Amino acid sequence: MTQTFLTLTERVIHAVGEVPGTSVQTYSEPRVMEALTQVFDVVMRKYWWPQYMRWFELTLDGTLGIVTDTSFGTSVVDLRDIKAVIPTGQEKGLPILPDQRNPFNLSGTTPRYYESLDTASSYYASRLLQFWPKTATGGVKIHARLKPTVANSLVNYLDDNLIVFGATWVILEAEDINPNAAKLAERMFNETFVDIMKQYADQPIENPITGYPTERYLSEWMVY
Image 1 (spheres, rainbow, N blue to C red):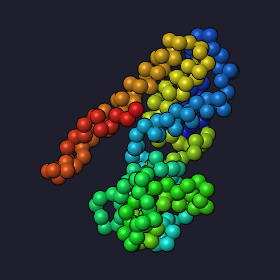
Image 2 (image 1 turned 30 degrees about the vertical axis):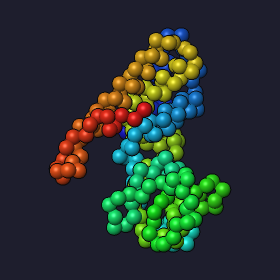
Image 3 (image 1 turned 135 degrees about the horizontal axis):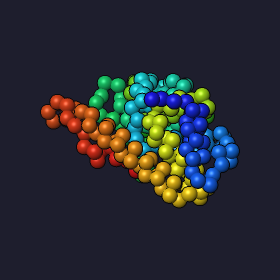
């Protein structure tokens, strides 16, 4: 069940308040919200959660090596959130520009590589990516992670228990309140995460050889 972060805050306060020797009043909503935000950010980076992924269909400008859509950078935070960049009409994705490759020697209208724009670029916040050669034209399909901003009214679409266990663990561990309670929250967090990964592993994907659905191997999903 999806819940708002405000509701999750109340659950964490309740969980911490049940630990012997603690006081519910000590843990205000801002402190718990901070812990929830920390856990949410960490969990978001652990896996390509389908509910936070989107395919973007964008067009290259053919001059600066950037996309024409000015809203792309506001939806995707940084290069870590890019899973695949595929030129329109192709099946194979583009690689990231190698560190030792001189991009200015590249020419033509076919995109060959991509990388992050630097933060000093006036286009970083809105376009995020640099394509090489800069004269590349056409469209690109980008599969990327959406990163919402955590706020009281935000709905959490990750597993509620996972986030609550994680935030409870963070608070108990940071405040050194009760080592046993902290270890319990840690164990519950880790077991819940592993269970979720197993459930994803049970979902079928296309076998690249036969073309028929097949089960994923668990090792494909375990990201620490």
